[in-house]
Image (tube, rainbow, N blue to C red):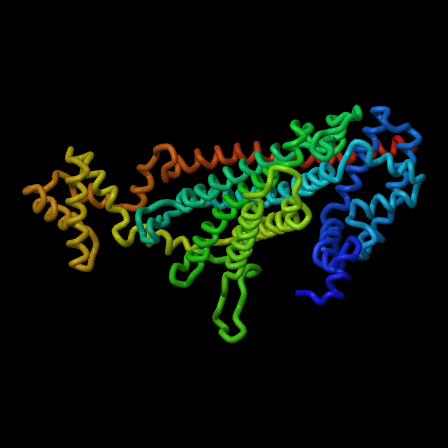
Length: 499
């Protein structure tokens, strides 16, 4: 229980209380300056222009407001410390604007809007830039993977299931799988961007306004596709960032799996990939060490970003459908940190593998070891002998057991002995047929079906991925260019009014 004097002091303390100021408002003010200062000004410019175009304020009032906004000392604002004389950056900027023009005119800037619709607008303005940055890195990573694919259609590798050698494949086929995953991640991020890039400004506190504003014009000036529709949902909905974080989460899961594969490949026990010198690190005590630290950081940073994504979604999953602080100033920086770290992991991955080289001899040798070609021997028996796969599987399985017992490989003689044991007679296949069936090159080459390992198929698949790459580059250029053009046009509009 608080002492009586302290309790009375707390009850009489004016807003903001010291503890509230130190633990909430000061941090929120610093975050807002860092993330939203430019966005606040863009919103002010666009809203002021629209008010004048709609006849809600005069052109002279518009010019005065625009000059006041243009006169703001942004460097001084960035250095400002929170002192409790204003509630947040919004009120601080209002105060600074009033210093540069008539107070009544300054007050008209807030006609037909609320902090609520301003906030959800500036959040989207910032988030869409972060989303484009992450998209750029994901596209760069896919491009670098596809470059490696183009060089390794014939490079044999062992494919693994349950972390055990399974069947021969090619490096192109393996890397195409990663590129295909990334293509879906890119599409998810594009959809998130498209759904996010709608403008809530004009929704007011939650029910719009009685003033004849033009929400489409403000959306246009800020580079949005269009306004959001329902004003209640415009304020209450959070899927503009949960969808983005969901797409980022899916991407990060893939990145973690890919990084784990390359980390295993870089270990001395596997010894099949060599990273460029700029991405490895030595040891302070062990001169021989060549640690693949870039891959470790990809995994660690990606895991950190994933944790932040899940943390945000956990924080909002049971909050009210309305205006609520839970999804605003305290939470927004975690969203941006999540995307920043996600981008760090993906960008680092793109750089790390760009100049990686592979131990082709070791990969090729392992593509024929550990009996991983015998699936094709069973398939050949089915085709040549008109037997069921169940019987062929039994013959080959018996052959493998015999080869292991003899500490050797499956041979024509071992296979025929197994066939006699299972069928009571030998197969019509020749020794040449058996050797070909057990060849890793043949194993890969015969899998020409859609999505298979044969070089003819991986070349076809690569050409399709290149088409997707071209389409996505066009999408990116259109969206990023659209945002830049909108920003340029907004400020040209302001300049035209100011004269």
